[in-house]
Length: 97
Image 1 (cartoon, one colour):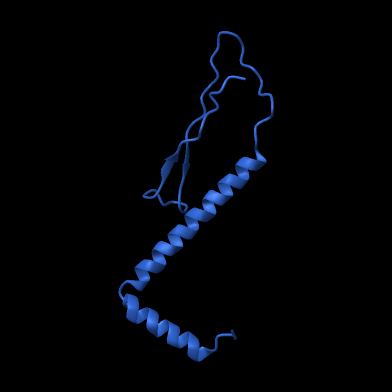
Image 2 (cartoon, one colour; image 1 turned 90 degrees about the horizontal axis):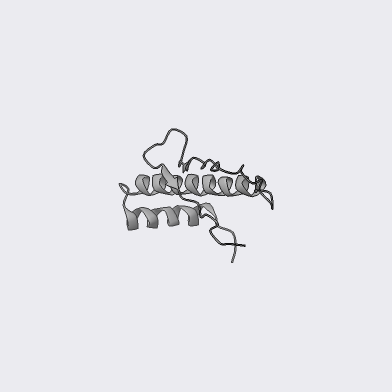
């Protein structure tokens, strides 16, 4: 299989426009861009969680006082995009050791 030349690329673009129509292509590209931004932000959040992992033996709270519960995180698709923001529920370790 060789490299694609300009003629083959133009032919592929024409087939794509004929299959999907010129009106749907911008919407498809927009949704693909949003998906890529969400994937990038999720990967970045996972990487920062790995770097800031909790110590193996967390310090115990003083007797009679409850440990403060952390605020829920919100992941956004893009800065300022509040329509696609959703709360993230993180699993808690409820097993007894």
